[in-house]
Length: 192
Image 1 (tube, one colour):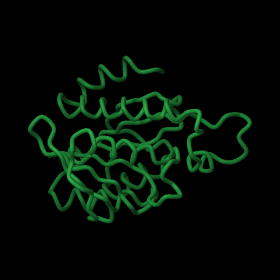
Image 2: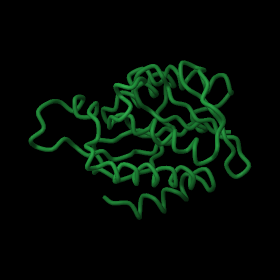
Image 3: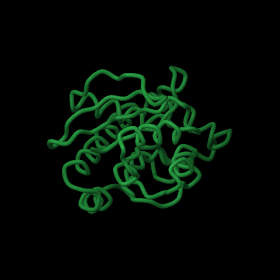
């Protein structure tokens, strides 16, 4: 069994924002694998599906990004899973828009959701899929936090849909093979 956690913020105000790409990928995974209905559990929304004969739990923490670790720790504890059975999907400012990178462990790179998970689990040794949203353009008036909490422009909608679809394929590849094999393919073929 593995827990796949897509990070984001709850509520309609945040639904289409860059910071919620993890929720978008989790929803797409649930649709792709015909998961059951989302139910409220562990201060999040939880469903499950089967991939290659293995049960996969899908979680969208509803604690707001900065407390994502609280929901994830509760789910891992209930199912008696360790950090090695956790796969996190999140937005990444340090990757160009549309790029994907698989990663095992490492720092939080200023991402408050990942920081919360590290703090609650007391380890950074969990797998991640980083979905590139790019840095704010030079003319952007505001902070990085302002940028990630803005919706993707309508002109980028097709590219966002493609990013989500490629992210689903990347997660599937990890679930069907393993992280190292998937990293060799995804990280080599993705845009820098």
